[in-house]
Length: 79
Length: 410
Image (cartoon, rainbow over all chains, first blue to last red; front, side, top):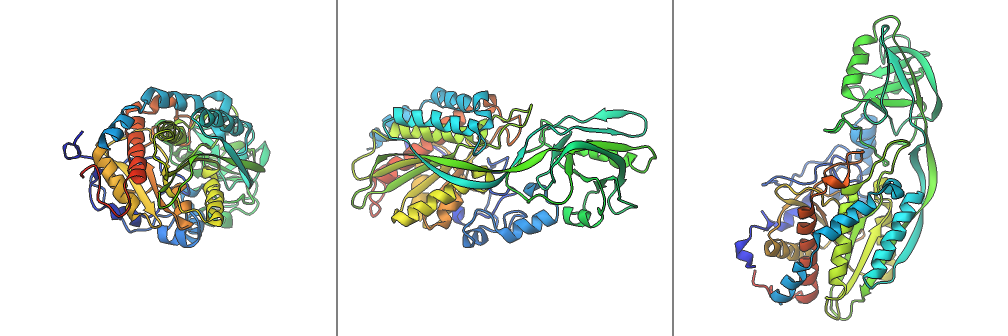
């Protein structure tokens, strides 16, 4: 197989995968993980998990403040 | 070396992976909730697989507190003043994670939260009102009724990670039922009788690990991970957890079968099948902490969902993962799998948070946390595509020195 004959690999900058934000689910993969092309990475925080940077800073997979806010607001993603 | 890789990729067996998914989704494993007998049985079965592929399975246990468990199907009946209807558990109603335990059904009139006297009534929470605000209107109420979206098959999602139990029974309703009750509530003679049998249990969960090679010198230390736990069956309601994450486990186990005997000396190679992801990625947190204490620095590839590829697999990276992403990109181009940055909120985040290079790969789920997550919805071609990606990435990481350009010419 020649690599030039395929259309695999990242559709954009692979480094964008380092700036992906949280999901609509709390510490669980979202129901529709598969994404259509192109799917630019967003920098907006998710309702339940906040930003990845916040989650990382807390040593968790979701930011607790965002999660608490979501729970208080009755967001379905956190139960 | 490209020939070696292609020979390895040719060995990826979709039928074998589909068989693994079917086995993990079997009723004997009961949805594989962390700390459950079914979860333990699945772990033992997977340990046998690891042993059969040449590594000694290691079980690493840890405690998990307050895991929510619906211990009986809720009994919910309501009347609009004319007809009486019994709601179907899992479709029309479910127990909210914030619910207090109410073993026996309690009956009372229907009312709307924030409108009128709540005492002795079941309160419908209107759209837009938060649970927090609803509590403020619910002094003396029998319980709360919250509308919640259902999936395309009409099932409620089950979540294990979420709020602690509150002071009242709380039931969720599908949108149609919620709307019907809201419309009927102002009418005299409407009522609901409902139970919310939910409790918290402290359990022992366990990761399952296997190591084929120990890293030496400057060799890469590869760690492939996937969580094997699910949200678990409910009483009378199977939740097979085939896509989430039997599919990811099948990919990792198949990759281990192929890579174990094939990777060169010097490259470290281990697999961790993780527990308690559904309760907050606790298994990976436990494992990552252990790795930090031992001074390890693995390249982590986590797969969560390899059930239904559409156009591209989602990739989320964390930690010092630039080289790992470059390798993944090479592997994607070599195997023809398109990749796009996208959220994979799974165990990979725990490893990244611990400072390790980690990527999460998600390639879709045919079902999610519901009875619809069945093996027949896992696409074998997706299993093959993701496994080829993982195998190629691992092979490239193990065979290409970090300071040299690609040896496969891309």
